[in-house]
Length: 110
Length: 112
Image 1 (tube, each protein chain N blue to C red):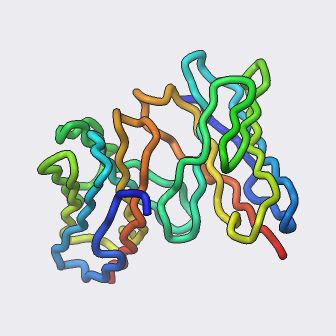
Image 2 (image 1 turned 180 degrees about the vertical axis):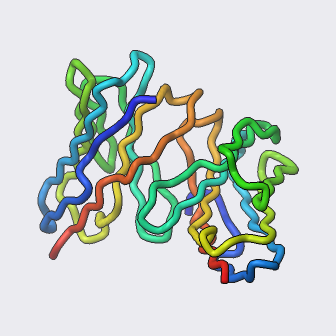
């Protein structure tokens, strides 16, 4: 399983764009990159998934460079309710267990 | 509301008690999971069921006993737990094993 590395914590002010980068140097050809969000005392929630280039949905954007050894989750104009832990996971999307690391704790400040 | 419900939401039990956690998914998924999340530790996958058959057991102690009577329901039977088993227990489901998973709100378990 490809190991991921992401910052332990980040702070941001409301209204700013937040970019969280994840390193996955040994990503395999069949692997997808998936991000989950977890609020305190709740289960994680799927945010976005991508394989290469850029993916955008109503919540976030995911940027993946050509070598796929890293990815960046972009949250536009964050609000206080975006305060959560964000997990980056790498896997083939269907045949191997999800491995959650420690994630990045994002704190949004008013 | 993710379509996955868990009961109870909070549970306090002594080390000699027997209790069960219940999970129900209303999404028509065929795979269900139990995860454990201890304070300041990553989520740990405990069990996986695919079409009611257990396909993963990540070296979980026998004091945790899962049961999956059908694709919509999943139980975790608990007996003679230890204080270190206190944690948030999360249930999840997906259409296809390990695809995008939908998590329930969790059961906060405290073992005294």
